[in-house]
Amino acid sequence: MARTRFGILYPFGMYNQQIENLAKQAGYEAGLTFDQDAWQPTDNLLELKRISVYPGLDVIKFLEKLKNNK
Image 1 (cartoon, rainbow, N blue to C red):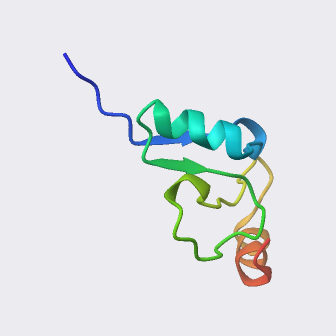
Image 2 (tube, rainbow, N blue to C red; image 1 turned 120 degrees about the horizontal axis):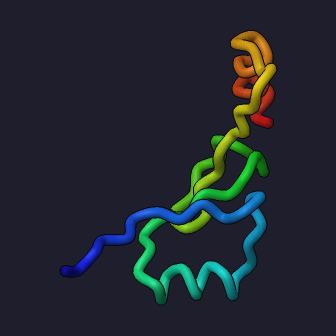
C-alpha cells in the first residue's frame, strides 16, 4: 500500500539545502520551518514558515506575534 507524504516539520525549524533536498527525494511536498520571518510569501513549499505556539501564550501575545511578523 503506497503512502502519500505531504508535509514534514523540520525539528526546531532547523534545515538547510541538503535537508530540503532529502525531504524532496523522500516524497515530501511541503516543509515547515520555525518562526523565521513568519508569514513571508514563498514559492518553495519546502520552506513554509510557522509561528510557535506554546503553553502560556495567550491570545494577545499570539496576535502580537502575528502583527509583528515574528
